[in-house]
Image 1 (cartoon, protein in one colour):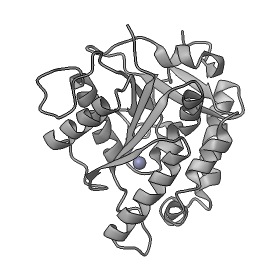
Image 2 (cartoon, protein in one colour; image 1 turned 90 degrees about the vertical axis):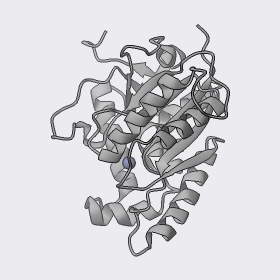
Image 3 (cartoon, protein in one colour; image 1 turned 60 degrees about the horizontal axis):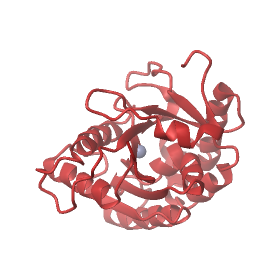
Length: 257
Ligand SMILES: [Zn+2]
């Protein structure tokens, strides 16, 4: 089966894509993939000393600049930060986006991520990917010939909503050669430095993200890593496309087959 070399990434908030998978996206871009980045919300609650509307305007600009590092378009679906619901309108909008970019691969949060907006995003995206190739869906773009492959990115802290450890990732990606691009992308999210300092007591958000990738790298046996799960449930394609395309930078734990 042929999958388009087009990766569509949909997370809940601006900066999620940069934080969780931009090192891997840079590898994919270098291997000829086109990238499109979208968020369900513009992160309107993520401002300190700014109104929600002002924060939305600032964060959309930051996200667009970060995406531009990979020559990727950025789109916001207009959900409200902290109040994201799975609606028919959002599902149709996501289907339209996935079709418009002729996605071969779609990446989103894990279904059991720690953040409720992330979990809702995962649910919307999973449903939309399943419907992307069906002709009866009421959306403008033409159905895809093949249902895209769905992958999940890691939650911060590596735990489920109750704080339990999460299932082992299906694979790690060595991002040692692309960490600089990742940091360049993150650096566009100026507004989050102050937010993370106040909300999560992170003195420097960017350094913390780098440390997160170092910690994952220690598990994977490389300097910096990101990790992923492929959505292998019923109704989904199971071709290991990303694992094949990224073979030179994929790392697996010994006990993972
Ligand atoms: Zn988020």
